[in-house]
Length: 275
Image (cartoon, rainbow, N blue to C red):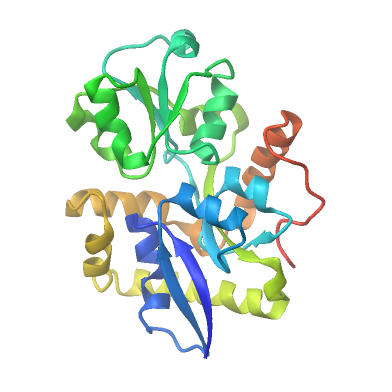
C-alpha cells in the first residue's frame, strides 16, 4: 500500500476531520502517516517539502504555491472564527504600534491579518499559540494574537479582547475569513491528488455521521480538554466550506491578492487547484 505523510494540527477541528482517514475507517488503497504539529511548524515543514499532504495557513500557502496546490476539502473558513488581539487591560487600537505583541508564527494567517490591520506594529514576539495567553497574563508581552480554542478561554486568564481580526476582515471585504486549508504536493500528480481530496471529504462525512467515535482521539491531542470547548471548536471551524470550499475560494483569492500587492508574499503563476 502506498503511504503518504499527512500533516495536521492536534486541534479538535483537525483531529475530527482526519480521524477516519488515519484510523482505517475508509475503504482505500493508500495509507497515511500522521504528523501532528502546530500549524506554523507544518508551514515550515512544507517550505522544505517534507510533507506530501498538509494543513497550512492561507498566509503560509502564499509561500508554498509553486510546490503545493489547495484541495477542495478540509479548509477552515467561515464567519466569527478569526484570530483575536487580547491584552490584560484596555489598549487603544491606535497604540498597538507601540506595544510588544506575541504572535503564533510569522506565516500564520493571524499574523497576516495583524499586518493588514496594524501595519506599524513591528515589536513582534513569536511563540507557540498555547503559550500566548500566559505570556500576556504575566506581562511578558503587552498583547497577544490568539487562535484556535484560545478564543473560547481567554476570559479565564483575565484578558480582554482588543480586536476580532476575523470580524474586521468580514466588515472590510464582505467575505468569510480564510484561515487555513489542506495542501498536496503538485508532484504527486493529478489522479493521486484528486483521490486524496475525495478521501478527505469522506473522512469529514464519516466524522459528521459518527460524531462520538473520534472523541477519545480528539481529547488525547487537544490543548483544551473541556467537552463544551471541544464541541464549540468543531462547530465553529468545521462547516460546509470544510466539506468543499466552494465559493469560499473567492475569500482565499482576495487574501492572497492583497498580500501580493503589499509584497507580503511572493507572486506565483501557479493555479490554486490542480483542476
